[in-house]
Length: 173
Ligand SMILES: [Cu+2]
Image 1 (tube, helix red, strand yellow):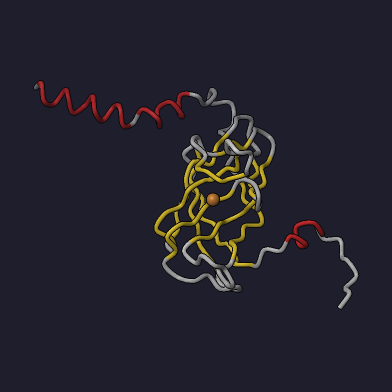
Image 2 (spheres, rainbow, N blue to C red):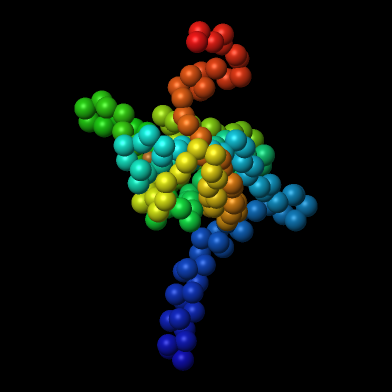
């Protein structure tokens, strides 16, 4: 009997996070927290890269709900490990990336851009090259319990592309 009780306690602890999440939902009259929406996902190619064991995924996350939701994890079959990274200044003032300890929050009713130089989904221990034109499937996990599978095209990152934002610049070629 004592053993059975112990096991129940352990199970209860493991389910604690899920319980907390469901407890925070409002009365039945209110709609459930709507799902996070992903836009414009892409993954940086390893073409021409000096380190072909790493890449990163970038995307825009929209949160139509009235509660903050965090992107807390990711996985992909093309890499051994995925981490949510943030950019911080180290002690010497240099900008470096590190694992975001609590993931990255998408504010209620707002959106968040994961872009080069900012938050990104780091792909580490790549099992294969990622040529331009291929696709990578990434599964995202959120603090709400939502899971989302995203298919991201592999692209070249150019600073110029980032600055243009759809405004064509005359070619000088
Ligand atoms: Cu990184």
